[in-house]
Image (cartoon, rainbow, N blue to C red):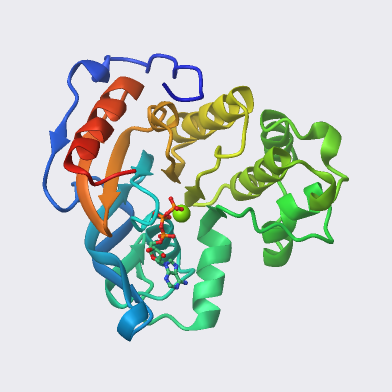
Length: 276
Ligand SMILES: Nc1ncnc2c1ncn2[C@@H]1O[C@H](COP(=O)(O)OP(=O)(O)OP(=O)(O)O)[C@@H](O)[C@H]1O
Ligand SMILES: [Mg+2]
């Protein structure tokens, strides 16, 4: 089993009783898309070092939905998030945030869009070493000249358990604490969409469950849109939907996931020799 306590039951109808699966190569639905990739490909390098990290991926992340992305190491999860968040260029296809097409945007427009509409939790934290934890958390808003919502900030800081560490610099924090700063930074500005690349990868089960619960509540109660990469079936069970990647392609998806149904799906991939 995974490292996190089981996700508490969902409100309303128990959607776990009717897991929906598809085996189509795309994951495009009908809800309003907060972000969408269409025929997205990403190729790194050339010649012998050429790597097709994403191969014709079409996927939608609906507004107010919590989506988990799973797949073996090297399957393209981080690349997909980076391309869809405008942090990396695409080789072919399209990526949109809301109605805005990212492909072809100038650097300045892209920077502005990322700053104003997207929260990103990097796999490698990306904290600024000279700033304190609090300064790192409020940096995007400070750069944008946006006022910090103090009550919301307090609730974010409290949830990630950083109240006693706000004046520490990243080097004075543990790996897990740095990851919590990175999560708080993405949440603090209440962006339209949060992309989180393994946000609980370095956390103990309690801190991990708290962040996952917080992410899910922000989706349920505030209509936040969250896309999260994880290797952990229990973490994925906090999401509304799991999208599975293998070799740069979407190979499956699972609605209303439970830890068991996710593990079951992963075992099926194992049997095909497609995941680690
Ligand atoms: N900057 C780069 N230059 C060349 N190849 C790259 C680059 N970034 C990623 N790749 C390759 O693209 C593929 C997908 O990488 P990616 O980081 O998206 O995988 P991932 O699914 O996030 O894996 P992990 O679970 O280990 O984080 C890998 O084969 C990787 O080696
Ligand atoms: Mg990755």
